[in-house]
Structures are given as C-alpha cells and as structure tokens.
Image (tube, rainbow, N blue to C red):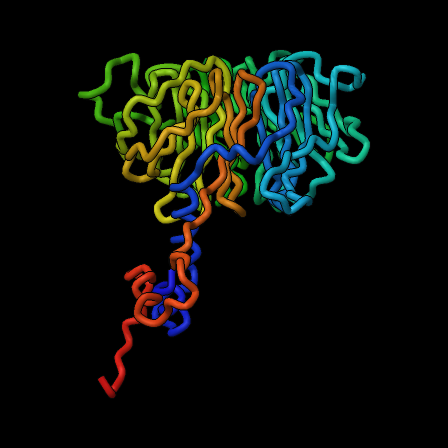
Length: 401
C-alpha cells in the first residue's frame, strides 16, 4: 500500500492504479457478512435485484410472490452490525401489485424517482417511486421474461422487452406506446440488454439457442448472430449452426466498457464474445451449472484489474476471472438455488437473491493492520521497527551510514 502511495505521490504511477489494486483486493476478499442483514420481506423466491447508480444507496427486489421491495443500503447507525431496511413495499394488499411473479426490476438510469418492473402477468409497469403507483402500464400477449432500459441513451427512451413471443418489443417511455418489433428469433426471448457503449445497440438471448445483436435504427434485421464455432462449419452440426449455446440462452451481460458480451445457457456453459465482431473468444470457464428455465441475472465487476464475473451456480455464486476463465472462488450461503446477483461498484460489494427468499450481502474483509501492536509501550526503537511488515518498510539510506 505504501509503495502505491509513494509512486503515485512521485508521479511514477497511474493515479488509478492504486484504486484498481484496492478494488481487486476487496473483490478477492468477499465474504458473507454476519453483521449485515437485509430485511426479509418476500414470502417466495427472489428473481431480480437492481441497485441504482445515482447514489448507490437504494436497491430494488422483485419476487416470485409478485411483491416489489425498495431497500436502503445506507448504514445510519455507524455500527458494525446493522440491517438494510425495507423502506417501502408494493405488497399483496396494494391494488397495483403484479398478479404473478416479477421477473425484472430496474431503476430509471438518471433518477430514482422512477423504476420499471415486468412480470408473468403479461405486463410491464412504470412506477412513480414517491407514490408507488404505476405512471404507465404496457400490456403484452405473453409472459414477460425480461426488459431493459439503456444506461446511456440520450437520443431515445426505449425499453426493450423479451416475452414468450419471439418478437422483441420496443416500448417508448415518452409516448407510452409500443413503437417497433424486432423479428428474428424462433422461440421466447429470455433476456435483453442494451450496450453500455453504443445507445442503439441491443443484444437479445432466446430459447432457440441464439443470441442476436441489433442496431435498432435499422429495419433490415439483426447486425449478426453469435456463432459458438466462429463460422467453422467442420465443427458445427447442422443443428448448431449460428447458435451461441447448445441449449436455452437465458443470461446476458455486457462488460462496463461494452467491448465484451457474456452469455449463459442451459448447456452449463458461459461464453465471452467480442461485441463488435461477434467473435467467440473461446475463454473456457468450465461447467457453470444452469438449470433455470427463465432469465438468469449475473453481474460483472467494475474498476478491477482483472475484472471478475459473478454468476449464480446452484445454491452458490461462482466468481470467475473474466478473461482467463479461472474459477476464483465459490460464495456459499444460500439454502436454495440463487437466481440473481448484483455488484455494487462503489463499495465492491455483492448482493444475491435466491429461492430461499433471502438477499445476502457479500462484503470485503477489512484489511489487516500492517503494523503489529506493541506488547510493551516502552519497547520501541529496534523492536518497534521489527514489528513493521517488511513489504512496507522504508528503503532509504543515510549518508552517515
């Protein structure tokens, strides 16, 4: 640590290097925190969670019971042991509550005054956070698996929606209407995701084993379809041509810079793709257990070197190195399958929700002191110097020596 600070002070090091190194250390030390609880409100499994990026303080959760909860993650007590309180709930007694399972919740990217939820009751609702009443309701012909608002859009206010209908629906927040459909998939669309780099680029994943990348300004179909074999017909059977996985594709996630796209499928594989060319990078993550018939929500770290992927794997959360595929650790604490996890980039924390109705907080272990406590206050000098970790000792020399 002192070496980083000295190099930064002397102008020998990139100012962000210390931040990346400390963020990486914190992610590598993630543990289930026994001192932090998240209020248990849901009576059934938790399908989706989202943390707003404005203050990094409020978290949404949506459950199989149709209930939506808003949590405050701030520790006002400043005590080591505290609970993340449920501020408000769209519960079963609320006449606007979803009738069936809530599959996706998302904060409006620019303001915590609004959030969007979608459900198996064939609706997507735009909520006013203050009143907890829907400002707008979009109705569809089939169950809604996934929706997503672009985190960077300035020229459009579109919500991409994946349903049991193979056509991707584009809904406009400004007009309150469905303005366009994207055709190309042959089965239900399980996950949709806007690029964090280009506001008109959209990725969609389907039960037809395909992942398509679209430019929504074009009317001529998708830009390209991801091919796990990178176009090598000798390796592909007729059934797997232009497929991303050998099963249902139920998870999508871009890296923060938008240069790479991660996909998960029921073939127990996770793949990393170049989002510009559609090339399979062939990173081998090994077997990634995935039995979900619906959308699987996983997350990528931000500000680390290297970056990490957090993906539900049975009743655990698996942590992988993004570009090497190395399994770093397994976070175990849930009693049943994990369906969603969300990384908090401000504090390098992870929140996960599962079928056990619990939301667990995975928090970095505090750095251990580099200087040991002196047993005798009078014993200083040489004894004090020997107590310093050698990695942090000053390496200067005196002219008198």
